[in-house]
Image 1 (cartoon, rainbow, N blue to C red):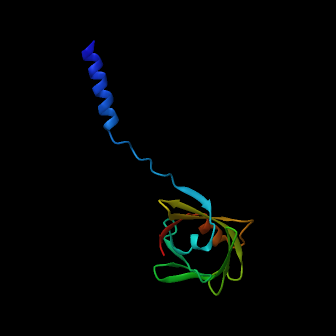
Image 2: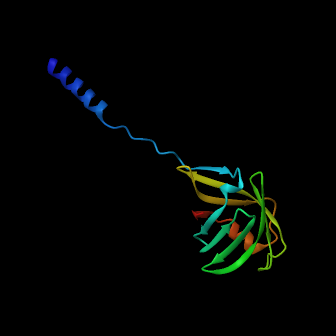
Image 3: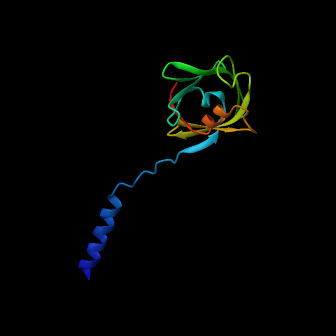
Amino acid sequence: MQKISLLILMATILTACQPTATPTPEPVETLAGSVSDIVGLWWSPQERSKVEIKADGTFRAFINDETFDEGTYIFEAGKITWTTIGHGSCENMPITQEAYVTIEDGKPTWLRLQTVGTDPCVARDRAARKPLKYLGP
């Protein structure tokens, strides 16, 4: 009986000495709280394009070095209103989208845009349905 009690005690001590797994925080998607949440270079793996959102209220969308869309934006209360100037079929057709940012380990990883209402520009609406991966500042 003492041997069994001793074995149980040893097993308990050895189990207690094992390192516990540190839980990794789950990614959290939230409505962007400020313009700094969306500023940076974002990549669309599905569209193979990039969007550069600058702090000065301008943006540029491009594939390789070829710009296919650019303009200005206004950020307010988690929403971005985009206005394209001088490029493509979406010129002078502003659109407002909610901006959802996924944060992992305190850093942005994904940007998901959700159109408020409808977008009259079909190409932009289709592209906006794809999440954008954060590449850096």
